[in-house]
Length: 255
Image 1 (cartoon, rainbow, N blue to C red):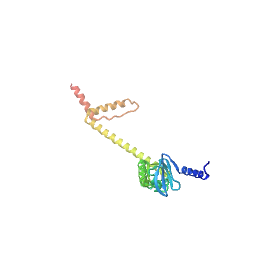
Image 2: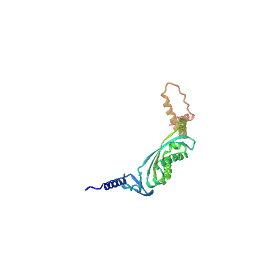
Image 3: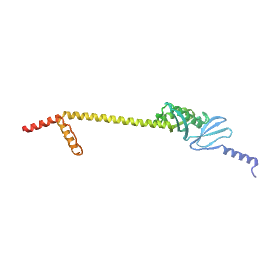
Image 4: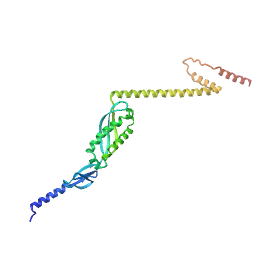
């Protein structure tokens, strides 16, 4: 004797109901379950049973999200207009708050990242934007993380990708860099001249204290220029040198 048709239909409906109430959540997923419209609990991962009609579940991905912040027009503290884009790395650490406290946490984080990027960079000069990106990345990350904490979101990192300048500003920076290089070259040349003059002064003082050293230096100079036969050289001979030579001759004669 077979099953009654009505019982068979009821069993089929019950099986469909059971199948429809089953949910499988992956390791990186959590389910925020509402019961009759009120928050009940966070479930997962694994097999989750959700009672149809009575309960509803919202899936939340806990993996790190890479959010590309579109180029933003930023006016620096020294009134230079630039376009800056960045990338934000964040993840959900509290699924309950991410679903209940904000309508769309991904869109909200994106909009907040754009406004925070403009606000933080607007407090700095252009040179800081170009040379101190690491510090600015940390500043933006701290501000953004503090504001998204109420949504159960952790901002792990912020990276400024590009700082785009117009052509006139690029040329101005190039001229500034060239002027800076010329200034450094002049300073280095002046420091070299100063060191050379100090060494020459020390050498002159040393030669002045030792008459024999002065004579030896003159003899070395004469030997150096004697090999050049293409020109006539007038070499001044100091009186002190002649006196020293006459004294030496006199002493040898007496001997």
